[in-house]
Length: 88
Figure (tube, helix red, strand yellow):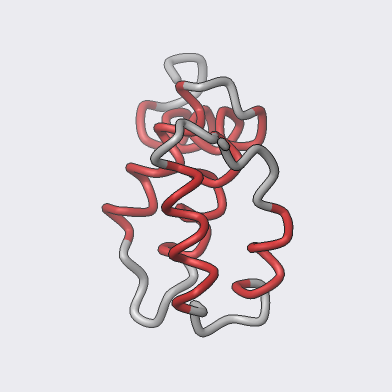
């Protein structure tokens, strides 16, 4: 059965430190094209110590491509900052 709402898993990563069990379940949901899980994986990678910005961007971009609204805003903001106003 597909994992549709990994909101229970995000509780484990919000405290920081990247709980391996939570990351496992998020990766499982992301492998089933769950945009919410992809966004949370991107957030976890960005907030890791040290941050893994390449993986963070990959996961957030995948979530945005699937229509995740927050991920889309983050990608738009990144493109705007990189390309300049009106080009992102």
